[in-house]
Image (tube, rainbow, N blue to C red; front, top):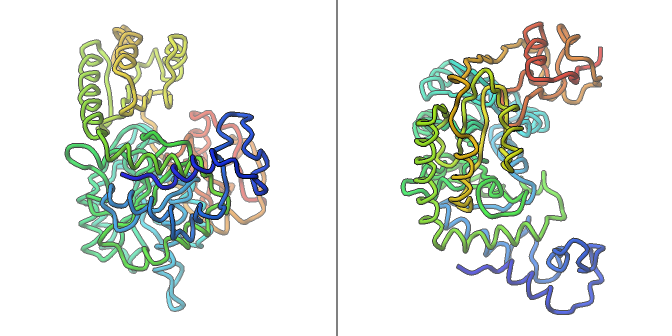
Length: 446
């Protein structure tokens, strides 16, 4: 597969052209990458009005992911999430209707919440029936069906996160079928799952019926940090494809990184090569690693193929185990009291997985701790937009009961926020702040 963006950047770096344009380093290698760091000069195309090499590269990506259209982001899935909300809210808006609203699983990235504020949209939450971590929110198709049937007016969209931070995966295909029976679009935050398309049996939202989804390419593919995709499904409302570039421009910088764009472009050739074989091999190795860990007394969680999530014993909580592994030269993705998360990719060496297994050794600390961390359900005093744009003040978390939250209070994104902007905080929320180590929060000024 051709790589028009990377080819252009390389050719320009070698051309000896006098750079009387941005950026200010002028190609001098202070870090080393500067010769390839360009701006939207002649021939380089323009990301939000792409009709040249960027359009060609995005079309390559669209073919690889089986989408109606795929757009590049150099600002991560956060930009794509904001664009998805903007597209769905704009389609649902009407002078005759109240503000648009979304039906969303509660473990939403903070970018989703800020997008609601910017779009002046409301939200109704889908809550997990059983939760022992704020990083997971297992909702079912039946919950979605019940919520849509009970709604007086249809939402602008249903919004879910899958995979979640702990490797939990939702039945996206079944949820999509429910949404489409009700003529409601499905939006999926698939930031952790770009590789799912290339498994022997695709688990990617584009193949499971999602109308819009985002992938953080940099999380699981060989793409520079910030590289992401906005995918539009083949059956999505036509307004989405027609307005997608505008949506991305609304929330994106006018100076996108060509280093990141070139890495997205090169990823197309990578995905079109032997990636499927490498991915299948690594997924098998992960199955074998889980088996070895189970034989050594460790418990794992989640079903995402390339995410290894350990359930931690009570006497060896996640942060403590992470520190121990750090001493062995191993850095995890995320640690909380009950869980330790490792993100694996096709580029993870087999020897590195063996090193991890050896460093963990045998679990002599007992079974996984049962540390329930149920979310707190709070009443709402104002809309998300009203709270985000209201005068705010930072207060000690223990003093929060009775105050209105002014920002998403989360342990890590994406996670179930302890409080969403506009919700009234109480003693249960204060206790959960303490358990998560949150000492201060933003509240609406009284």
